[in-house]
Amino acid sequence: MTILELRNFFGWCIVVNFGLQLLVFLFVAFGGNFVYRIHSKWFKISKEKFDSSIYLMMMFYKTMVIIFNVVPYIALTIIAK
Image 1 (cartoon, rainbow, N blue to C red):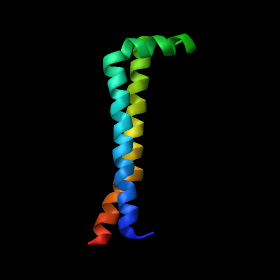
Image 2: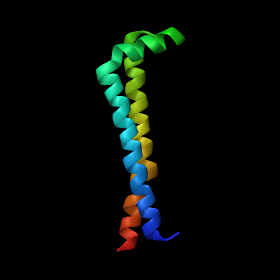
Image 3: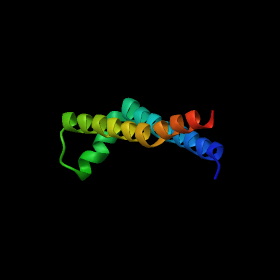
């Protein structure tokens, strides 16, 4: 696998992962009560705790995407020049 192919792979990983994150954001932003009702049937959780859990999950996911997709993409871009 060449550096260019690997860089393209990480580029598409970034697009897909941020697309998934945008989808979760849209679900929570526009259907937050619906999502909360579904999850509160499965787990005993308050609305405030649910909101903070979703926020922490999104923050963790974004951090992992940056560490494992964006940083390698940038490094491969620098190496390719």
